Image (tube, rainbow, N blue to C red; front, side, top):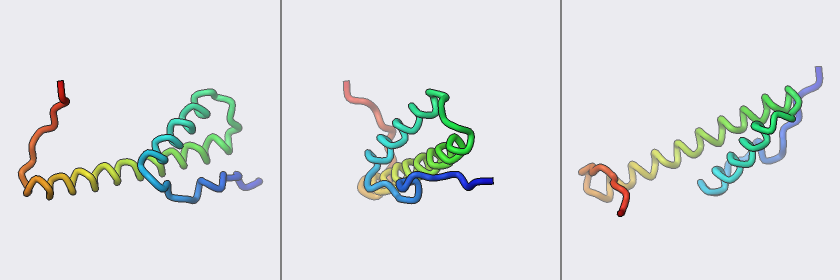
Amino acid sequence: MPKPKGSPAAATTPATFEAATQELDALLARLDAGQLPLDELLTQYQRGNELLAYCRARLDALEQQLTVLENGSERPWTAAP
């Protein structure tokens, strides 16, 4: 059975959070189109999971940094009116 081909970007870590979300949006559009062969569908799904984990990790790290900046006192976030 042939090995699924991954894109060169599939093995790389995104440069920024924004780059990761942009790649994830494009990937979701391809998955939603429903036109990918089964092997590539699996490869793209796995890449999506990698990107999602990266984004979650970056958001968690940012949240920890904000907590430190606020001297350890967590405050609920509210949107500006």
